[in-house]
Length: 82
Image (spheres, rainbow, N blue to C red):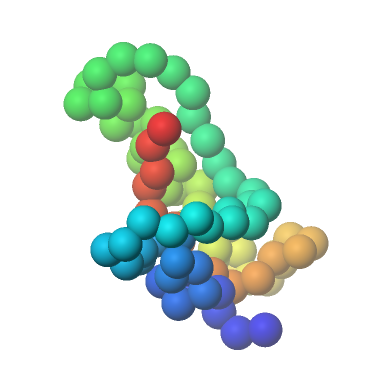
């Protein structure tokens, strides 16, 4: 399997067309933070920095000789909020 690129493999989720459609979102593993407050505040910024640091650290593990079970090369996904 080559590199997983969300822009190509999940185009219907992340680059939708202009017409409304029903989509099926597949199960995925991801990091999450939980909380309330101003997203422009320092605590939120620190949490986001941690999320990206974790994702990039895992992405680079094979280059350091460590490959977690189930790992596949990927492009880091965009930040999502709910």
